[in-house]
Image 1 (cartoon, rainbow, N blue to C red):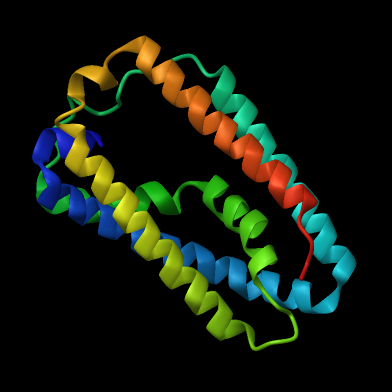
Image 2 (image 1 turned 90 degrees about the horizontal axis):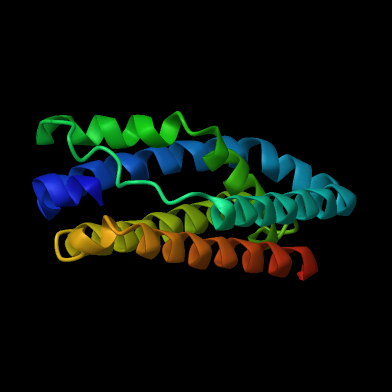
Length: 178
């Protein structure tokens, strides 16, 4: 959003593509270890599922309780040419992303089927969805600039997204393997 505010959508798209490259790298790391674990044990699957659900609920509670923060990076000059690398590094240096993927992907993997095609479908789905969402944020950022600076509006956003994480965690905890 901050890149969209400062440089416009086409520059923000470079950062978004960097984020997606990092997402594919992280999902590859998860796939390398998670596939073997899921194929080996239903118990391991259930433990991973419950840990993932707990993590999502914890994230939701943290987001709900978070004090409103200003939109970051609005005064930092970043040439549009460096935005791809910036997006790549932002996601690659976020260890929570791998934990999040490891928590979320097990429910979509059938250990009795070839796993590479399943992870490729997950990667494609995640990248397309994330690109659409991030593009929407970048396109709307300039029109919502005043709202992004309002503390009450940011608190409402935090509570909304916190509630979504808590709900996702609860759904994950109660989901079955098949």
